[in-house]
Amino acid sequence: MAMNAWNCFVYIMLGVIFLASANSVDSLADIGVDQESCCSSSDLEDQCGFVCYPILKPLLQYLEKCQEMDLQIKELEDMFREQSVEIIKYKSKTEVLSKHLENNFCDTKVMELGDAIDVRIDVQEEIKKLKLELASKESDIIDMNSKLFKKYELLEQKNKSLKETETAWVITIRRGMYHGIWLDHRSERT
Image (tube, rainbow, N blue to C red; front, side, top):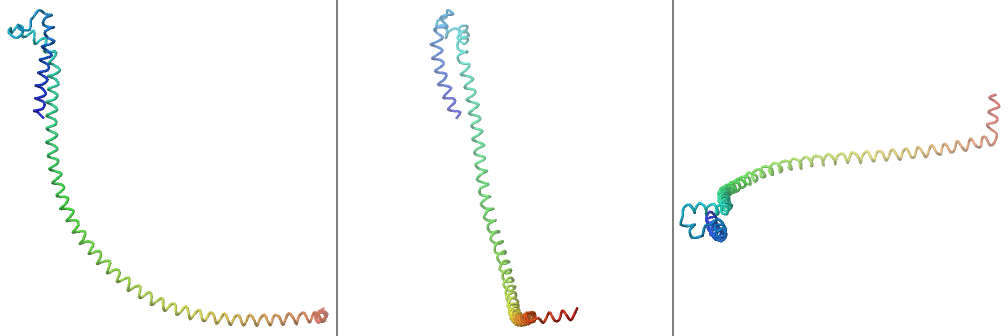
């Protein structure tokens, strides 16, 4: 980059000299100095500097800024290289750590799987016990159900018998009222 700035400066200087020589002929002629005598006399050289300096000053300032920018770019490139090296180091460390973590993860998963198998076996044994208990409870429920059904049938028979007795009583009461039996009993009470 520094070479580019130097080449740029050389081209700019050539352009400035050309412009200064074209413009300074008129300016120097205005102050009474011809172009040939400007280069030979040291007093006149100061007068040439007086004319050329305002033209060259912005270019010199621009060149200074270009050099500063080149320096900053070089520093940034150096920082970029350093960071690239660090990134490569961190990537390699990350790969090593991820492999290590993967191995540990696999070991942990194997242990967790073994624990899960043990728990599953325990649960299966518990399920077998519960199934046996459930089967015995089901037989108890079936026995109780049959007993309840027998009691229900007995209650139905008793209910039927009560209804028949009630019907007989109702018929008897109606017949007695119909024949005036109840009237006789009332008169005896009073």
